[in-house]
Image (cartoon, rainbow, N blue to C red; front, side, top):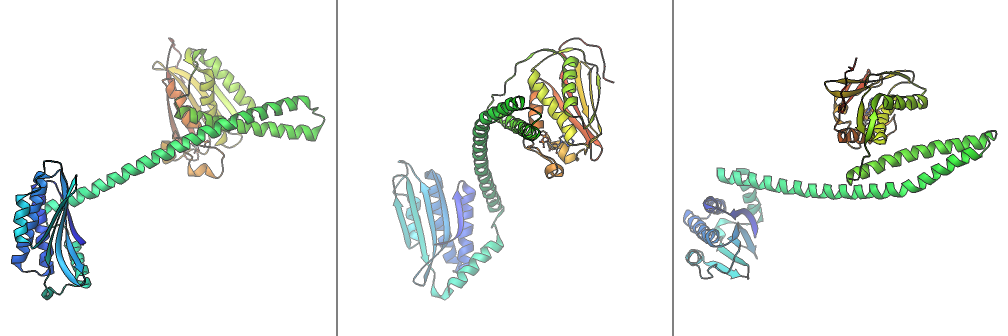
Length: 403
Ligand code: ADP
C-alpha cells in the first residue's frame, strides 16, 4: 500500500480525522460521494473499536495496486490484551459496508485491513497516484487538530533526535575522559623519570663541555614543559573523576603572595612586575593548588603581553573579603572570549596560531578558586590588557584596604 495518511488513534478527534482523511483521499480518487461516505464510515467505525478497546493503535490510509488493479485501503494495527473482543460489533458493521475486510490477531497485536476496488472509470495509474500524493501534501492538514498533531509529531521526533544526540555526546565525552585519564597517567611516569635523569645529568656534566651541557639544558627545559602539559591533562582527568583533592593549611597571605611573585619575577625577566601587598591576614588554603592557580593567571599575563610591559599584582581586604588583582598591558580579549575563558579547552581564535596552550589553565584555576569558596572575574579591553579579580572570604579579622 502506498500510504497517504497515518493517524495514531488516541482520542475522539482522531476518529474525525480518520473520517476526514478517508473522504479527502476518496474524493481525490474521484469516487462518488456515496462511496466516499461508506468507506470513511467503515474506517471510523473500526478506528473507534480500536481506540475504545485496544491498548494503542494506528490507522494508515492509502492506495494499493495489484496487476494494474487499484484499491482504496485502510490498514489498522493495534496492541491488544486478553480482554480485547475477537468478535467485535464495530468490525461486523464495517464488514457490511466494505466488501473486502481482513481481520487477524497475534497474541499481542490485531490487524484489520479494509479494501475497496477503485473503478476503472476513475482512471487510476502511477501518475495520478503521484499527483494525489502531491495534492495532499499541498493542501496540508485537513483541520486545526491535524495541524497540531503534525507539529507535535515533529516536536516529538526532534526531541527524540536530540535525546539520541545527547546520549551519543555523553558517550563520546566518557570515551574522551577515559582516553585523557589513561594517556595522562601513562605519560606521567616516563616524563617524571626523564626529567629527573636530565636534572641529574646536568649536575654531573662539566659546564666546560659547552655543547653537551647546552644540549642537556635544552633536554631539561623541554622535559619540564612536557611535565607541565601532562600535569594539566592529569588535573583535568582528576577533576572529571572527582579526585581533585586539597590539603588545606593556615597561610599568611602576603608572605605567600610575596614568595610567588619572587619566583615568577625570577623566572620571567622579560616583564616588569609591580606589586602592592595589603592583605596580611591568614587564610585556609592548599598552598600548591592556589599557587598553581595564581601562577597560571600570572603566566597568561606574561604570555599574552609584549616583553617589557608591566604586570601588576595587588592584594587587599575589602568588605570582609580578601582580594587579589592581577593586571597586564597585553592583547586583551573580546567580549565573546571574556565570557568563555573559564570553559574547559577554550582558546580564543585570536591566540590559536600565535600562542601555545591547551585551554586548560583558567578552567583549573577557576575550579581551585571556587573550591576555596572564592570567585574570579575578568575585565578586559582588546589591545589594552586584562585585569583578573580574585576574591576569597576572609578567615581572620583584618582592617587593611585595597588601594
Ligand atoms: P591557554 O592559555 O593555554 O590557551 P587558559 O585556560 O589559560 O589556556 O586561557 C584560556 C584563554 O583565555 C586563552 O587561550 C586566551 O584566549 C584567553 N586569555 C587568558 N588569559 C589572558 C590574558 N591575560 N590576556 C588575553 N587573553 C587571555
